[in-house]
Amino acid sequence: MQRKRHTAEFKAKAAIEVLKGLQTCNELAGELSVHPTQLSQWKKHLVDHASEVFANGKQRQGMDQAQQDQLYQQIGQLKVELDWVKKKSGRLSR
Image (tube, rainbow, N blue to C red; front, side):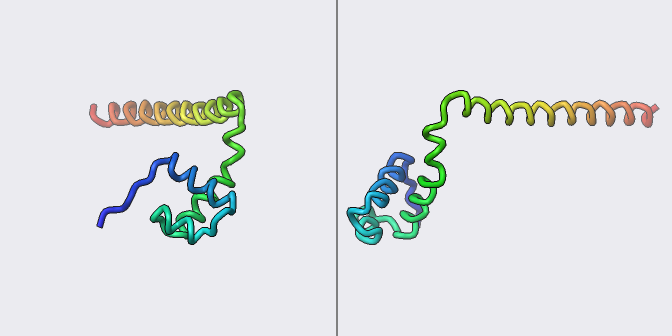
């Protein structure tokens, strides 16, 4: 049996409906053909990450810049290690 894959839009709308509280989680799960536990997980994810929706561009860019800096640092470290291995292997092969 193949799993259903729901779009992010579907998940968001379902989680918002759960938050509204107009229907119980079980009722809504029956309507949407989704397990109630899955709805609860989507709701929790929405609540936990709601602040990211309101983060301005500078905050998002800052997070991206920090990740980029970390990746450049790793690239530099790997380059140094590679150069060292090349140098050592060159000496051994002579």
